[in-house]
Length: 478
Image (cartoon, rainbow, N blue to C red; front, side, top):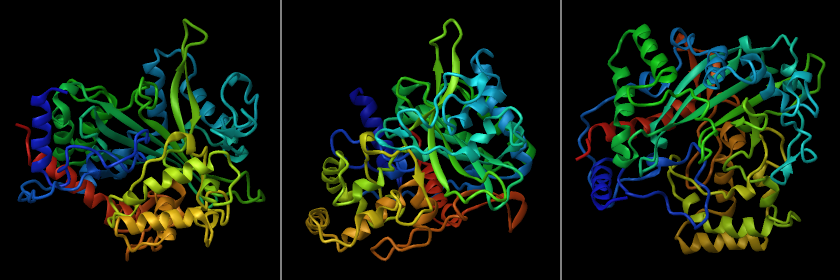
C-alpha cells in the first residue's frame, strides 16, 4: 500500500464514527478472520480523541440494510439464484435442479443419487470433517431425490441483507451481500433455510474503501425511493447484473470459488422426515461453491461442506478433553480473552484458527458437543484459572464462564438459540432471535407485506450497521 493511499484511508477512517481505527481488531499472529458476522469496518470503534461528526445522512434500515418486502423478494427465489449460478458456468455440468439436489445430497451417505455421483457426502472421512463429527441428515437429504415434493421451487427469498460493514478496512473487497432463502410453506417441524453470502470484489482495490463508495451510495439511495417496484428493479440489477464497473452479487465466483476462498453458503436445517419421524435438532452448516474441472473441458459447480467459521468444536472447551487439539485451542483461547471481554455486544469478537472449527453446529441439544458452557464445566481447572488470570490482567470483572458464554454467543447455535435472551456478563444480555432464526419466513406483525426479522437484528445489530454506513457516507474520501 502506498503512503498516499494509506494516509487517505486513515483520514477517512478517523473522520468517521465507527470507522475510526485504520486497522482491524487486535489479534494474535495466525488468527483466522473473525466470524463473517464479526469483521470489517463495523468492528472498529472511533479513534481515540476523534469526535463523532454531526449526522448529515440518514438511512432507513428496512430499505437500505434489511429488505424483507414480499413484493421485492418475489424476484429473488431459489430458481432465480441457482439458474444464475449455472449460467455463469456456461450451462455446463449440473442443471439448476441438479445443483440444488447436489447441495442436499451432501447430507446423505455415499454414493448418493445416481445422477450426482462423485460428489461429497456425509460419510466421507467416516462422518467427520476437520477432525469433528459430521452426521448424516436424511430428512434434509431427501430433497436430493428427483421425485422429492420439496424441490428448488419450494424455496423463496425472505430477506436481502446489506453487509457493507463487513468490508475490510483496506478495501480489498466491498463487504457481503446476502440472500436468505426459506422453504415455503413452512411448519414448526419442517423449516429449512439456505443463505447465500456473496463477497463483492472491489474493482479498484488501489483506492481502498473509496473504490466501494458506489456500493454504499447505491444502498443509501434506496432509502429515498418510496416506490417498492423501483427499489425491486434496482436491487434486481445490483444482484444479478451489477453496478457499473462492478460484478453482480450473485456469481459462481463469490461463494468460495476464488483464490482467497471468500464467500460462503450456509444452511439452517430443521426438516423432519415425516409426522412420525423422530425429532432432530436445529443444525447449522457451511458450504463453499467450487468449480470441479477434473473432467475437463467441462467444469461442474458443486457445493462442498466446509467448517463453520468461529465455531470451535465444543469439546475443545472441556478441560479434560482428550482431543489432540484441546491444549493448543485452550492456549489460543486465553489470548482472545481481551477481545471477548469488550463490554459491547456489537464488538465482542475473537479469532478462531480453522484447525479448531467444527464441521457443524447444533443449536439445541443441551449438554452436547456444541454446548460450550456444559463442556467448560464448573471448574476449577487449569483452563479456568488461565482465563481468570487473563481477565485480571486486562482489568475485567467478568468471570471465566462469562467469557465462554460470549464465545458461545458468537457461534451459530449460540447466536440463534443457546444464548438468545440470556446474560453474557458485564450486565449485558444477548439479544433474542426469532425462534432459531434472525430472518424469518413469517409475516411481520407490524406489516404483513414483509417478512419479520428478529429482535436482535431490529434492535441491536441493524442500528450499528446503520451508523457505520451513515458515517462512511457523510465523510467522503480526500
